[in-house]
Length: 578
Image (cartoon, helix red, strand yellow):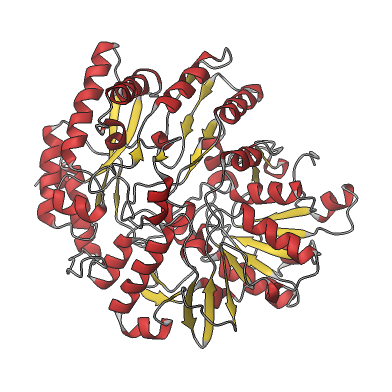
């Protein structure tokens, strides 16, 4: 084993001279020691805190459970994550058909993780080692921390803590809560005593405080869809605050306590996480095999976290928060230089991005206003007047990366919010800078194809999606063509669209087909709406009601209704032309 990697086997642990690990992480993904892979980040953060950390990637849950036994008991606790994606999205299409590949597995092979790994892995560990604490984390735990609608089983499920029997759950980005849990367990506190760790959820005999939020019990939500969507609204409002209140929900006779999140992470703290000694490579155990997700991101740089777009179908804000936390320019430049030193690097950075590529270093002008704001989006229905949309720092960063002698081109592969870049600020200097940003983006940072996400063409649907008018996309399309002409480039604008979103009818899809055809787009980046936990769109799909207005919302639900809407994307193909 290359000594820079965290150990994954008993032999690797023995070679390091450890008696046993302090913490053992179980992950549904292959082990790639890269800051884009959650298990690697958590492992490196705990290692920096002085703990001996081992990782068991993609354990076999169908044999004699030797993968769960091979490292024995950790000194402090087990950590469990399903991987970078919700397992059900990873496994199934919007039509509930089984996928035949897995981008986070060596060779892209399907079947190396179960459905709901958070539940399966934890139950096995609790059966084998009932006295060892298990802490859940990752996207699956984060979005299933309260009672939620599960599309794949078509039912309301309780908090994943109830189904998994884990001792504690971390929601959101887990570096700070996992470090505090480790420190306090190491100091001798029992897991039951860790009732106040921010950004965690647990069952407790405590009682709610006067200022806390108490949701309708899970049992009542089973009987009333209205109570479920009212719960969702309360959770989303608290999630949109920089620091929310404690939330409670009675679940099958037990009281679930969800502690408030940590404040948004600082630039300095984020820089430290990205400075940890990642090898940026897959573990040697995968020698000769390709991990598709790694190939996609190996030459990319994540510049910030969070998203204030508030799209109704998106889970980013529910997991990463609405507030943007950005790395320093120096930290980003340092990572680009590290990428350039990797053998085989050909001079091309695949992505200078984030959840929305151009939100880097943007945010509220007056923080005291942001601290009181509960709106889910800073961009819809209009761009907030308190939002500083100045792209100068991002533009300067692009120019510094371009100036590095090792870099031939640095592309932006993440999606861009063109409505953010195009929004008038009332400041001529900032407006000029933002126009310059758009021109530089199109002329220097597009790898032949620029991804943007209008998502639909009809205002009625776009309002439910919390997306801007399609007219803004049409204007951006004109700018894109103009810049291409100016620099004699032959590049494509690739728009993303969604069918079967709540509120979208066949007529809306017919209009979408007609409008995109008129613009000469033959759509390829399209998807059928997939309900995922903790999104507004999922609650509308489940209840048929908009939680914020109380209005009824029709949604395509049957396989035929959904397939029919999707066919409108492909008007240019013979079977769909009629």
